[in-house]
Image (cartoon, rainbow, N blue to C red):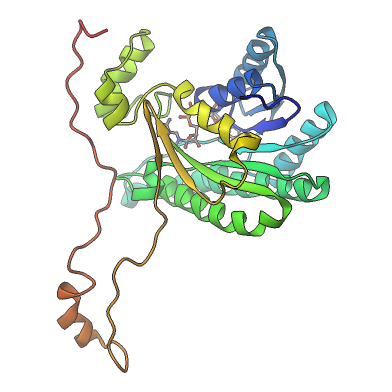
Length: 307
Ligand SMILES: NC(=O)c1ccc[n+]([C@@H]2O[C@H](COP(=O)([O-])OP(=O)(O)OC[C@H]3O[C@@H](n4cnc5c(N)ncnc54)[C@H](O)[C@@H]3O)[C@@H](O)[C@H]2O)c1
C-alpha cells in the first residue's frame, strides 16, 4: 500500500494503537503529525518514525477543544503544506459503575473522545472542503459503544456517539469526496491490559510470545500492529467509496458491524395504547429480545509451552 504524498494527523499517537497507526501510515509513505498529551511519548514516536526513514512531527496538546483541533490542522499545513487524513484516536478511561460515576468522570471521557473527535473532524472538514481534493476521516469506536459495557457509562456513550457521527458525517461530507469510517479495534494496550480475561494474553504479548490462534479469532485480540493495516487502507485511495461504516479489527479478524435498524414491526389501526402493547408485545416485536453487553468468548488457559 503506497500513500506517498498524503499528510495525516493521528491523535493520541504516543503509544498503543495511535503509535501503531502513525508508524504504519509513515511506513506507507504518509507524513504524520503525531499528537499526544505526553510530550515524551510523542517525541519518541517521531524519533522512531524518522529513524526508520519516515516523516513525522510532534504536536503536543490535549484534544477536546477547538483551539487544539486548529493547532493540529495548522501544524499539518505548516509542516507539510496539506492535510489528507484525520485519525481521531486519543482516548482515556474513567470506569465506574453508574451510581459511583462522578460528573468529572463523565465529562472527562466525553471531552476527550466525543468532543475531541467532533472538534478535530470539524476543523479537518473545513480544510478538506477548502482544499477541494477529498479526504479521509478515521474515527475510533469500541465494542463498548456498539454493545454497552459494565462500568463504562461515559465511554460507551462517547463511543456510540462517535459511530453516530461517522454515519452523519459520511452524508454531510460525501459531496466533498471525504470518506468517514469508524474503526472498532481490539488490541493489547495500556487500555486493555487490566481486562481480566485478556490479562494472561497481554502478559504473553509483553514477553514477545504469540497468542493462540483461537484468541486472535474468537476474541479478535492481538497487537496494535494487527489493527494498523485497516487504518492505512482507510487512509488510501483504495478505500474510495467506503464510507459511513463501523469496521471491526483485531488479531486475525476483520469484521463489519451492522448499523441499528428496526428488525421487527407490528401495526394496529388507530395506534398503540399501553394496554394494547402489554397484550401484544411478547408475541410480536418483543418475541425475541435483543442481547446487550460484549460477549466474552470461552478461551483456553494459556499453556507455558505454547509457542
Ligand atoms: N485497545 C483496545 O482494544 C481498544 C478497544 C476499543 C477502542 N479503543 C480505542 O482506541 C483508541 C486508542 O486506545 P489505546 O488502547 O491505544 O489506549 P492507550 O491508553 O494505550 O493510548 C491512548 C493515547 O491517547 C493519549 N491521550 C489521552 N488523552 C489525550 C488527549 N486529550 N489528547 C491527546 N492525546 C490523548 C494518551 O496519552 C495515550 O498516548 C482509544 O480511542 C480507545 O478508546 C481501544
